[in-house]
Length: 123
Length: 123
DNA sequence: TCCTATGTTCAATGTTTATTGAACTATCGA
DNA sequence: TCGATAGTTCAATAAACATTGAACATAGGA
Image (cartoon, rainbow over all chains, first blue to last red):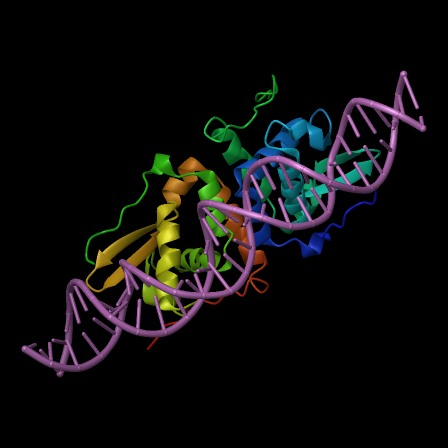
């Protein structure tokens, strides 16, 4: 249970898989939350998403997000820290992640996204 | 068989449904082909996509694209003409469709998209 | 009017998906 | 060493999905 799980290389990131990953409301919420948190810290751990679903279901979604190249998992003790693979995504599909995140932000209510305690569009 | 099928209003277009639609290779190819053709004509008819799959399978994918608000279907005689709902998409999710289309263009080979000006026509 | 082209509908099929809970593993701190 | 914490694995399940072919509907032209 302690080794870092496999991740695709930048070049292996595939558009349909990325879009499919982002099309699930729970995974979109994970990605959104990760993006919101980026100003504070680039990483969050699994437990930070417990509000979205049960632990084993989250493990399933984390694996999908990892497998498609959207996020990176780092193992530290009993924790797993995850961060968005922004540079890789931007290199493969310029503007895509930002467009999705902006779209998600616009529909935050509808998508029941956690808009951050006070991180609401500071600039 | 002659009435115009139902379409969602602009406001009813939902991000997860749009992303899910675009995540399927056949549907992405349809959208891409429609976008490519836009300079020439904003519409294509079902038969123009026969190279992508069988007719009944295409009907299924067209319905998904229509239901999620990505395209508009117009009935004319025995033909159905389809076009991208660019304005509506842009209003709801600014930059999203373009980012996806650009990403798809980058991976045209990988995604086996028809890159030329030629449209596969059954005759 | 009949024939053909265009596209839909329907049922059947096999696959993938998301979700759940129980059992498990690993790490840390007291 | 014990117990709590963090997360994974596995099996089961129900729903959704993509694909196929056959039958059908409709409009237009010979």
